Image 1: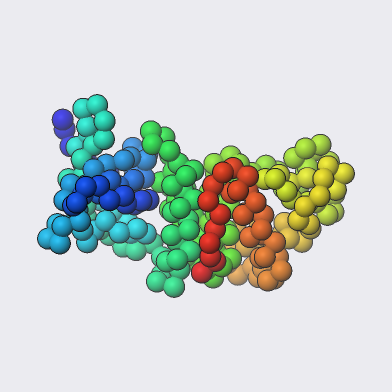
Image 2 (image 1 turned 180 degrees about the vertical axis):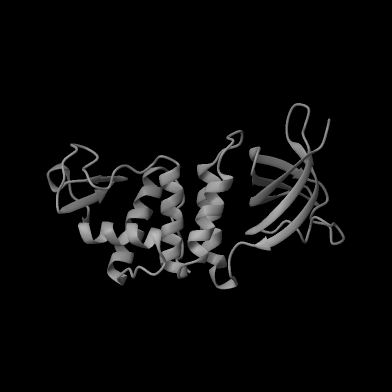
Length: 222
């Protein structure tokens, strides 16, 4: 079969046998792929040093006739994040790995945009902005101006079970108009300050959203 070239980002590496890896990669034009990287764990393998998360990669692979393709070559480019943000970046990859499935032709631009949000902000608030953008582009978030249950609007909304709602529709974390404005402002500009308590609430909202949809919760903010 003809070989294919594309740009991509590494999502996961899974050991296979004694020397190989199964790699999950999200590509610019072909969506998410699972590929066999044969011998990638050998000390002298050229794939060993190039298959690292959070780096732009140029890939070449051979599709499988009926199943998984084979990774042939990887050229590693620039890192997407400063070293201080790598732990937060791995959190983003963990979420993206569960949001974007094999066979889907999107995810690459969304993941790149999320990493840019993180890179331009402090690691703790940047992580919230990045995860929020992934959830938003995946269609999991509704209009933050209205209750997602009754459609009403209130000065003090609530959040629970993955939904924004008014006080009449249930309890949960308080979501003030100030918090909503702060979240939106910080998404648009790293110069917008987000108070620590608002950041704590935003994190709780993100954690609740992930858990409601059966995704692994975040383990750190830095």
